[in-house]
Length: 220
Ligand SMILES: C[S@@+](CC[C@H](N)C(=O)[O-])C[C@H]1O[C@@H](n2cnc3c(N)ncnc32)[C@H](O)[C@@H]1O
Image 1 (cartoon, rainbow, N blue to C red):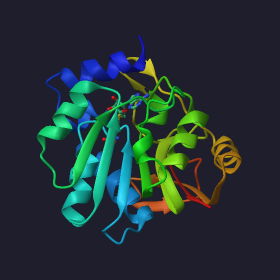
Image 2 (cartoon, helix red, strand yellow; image 1 turned 90 degrees about the horizontal axis):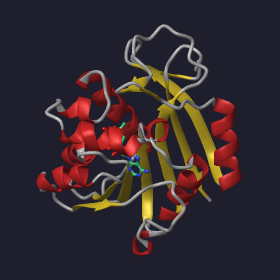
Image 3 (cartoon, rainbow, N blue to C red; image 1 turned 180 degrees about the vertical axis):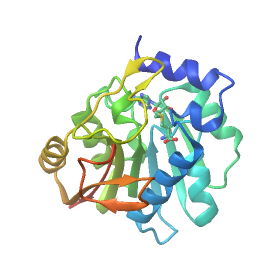
């Protein structure tokens, strides 16, 4: 089964909001939102794109902190985009488009404009090409804009009780070295790769212990 079918089925199901987004717990999802917000360090009046936005939960979360933020959410699943639109969030637009397919699916009118691009938990669960997707994130940013994303970590050591599959489909994981190489080759600078743990409540470079990587790079 393709990832898009997995997500379409999930999003159409009666599961809870965090389960529709593939999270085991609402707290885990919220924790990653908090960490990404911290890494973005927004002023609050920026233009931001969220790739693989799902039903718009992260947009809704950011909206509560920054009323002046302009958010464009992109998701390949129509039902996710419809659910996000139904939230009626001020200054938020949601677009159905595929990331990482390299077929010019992302609207050209939104390129080069944004101070921030985010992507939470997309790259381990999609059928696209990660190199292409990171390039797309780069093309959406203006100079000095930041890209912050989370992805499962291949170096994971095994003390975290989260299944690395969604509906039986194994997730892809990435090593720190591979992420660094991808970010460097695409032209991101000041690249930070860390990990975070709900259990420890901290940001850490000790990536072997924790399952989720957090990555930040700056377009220069
Ligand atoms: C793990 S969920 C994460 C949702 C949200 N970012 C969050 O953390 O709550 C992954 C999302 O990516 C979307 N997706 C999968 N492949 C995609 C692609 N190629 N382009 C855009 N979105 C995609 C799915 O529909 C799903 O909503």
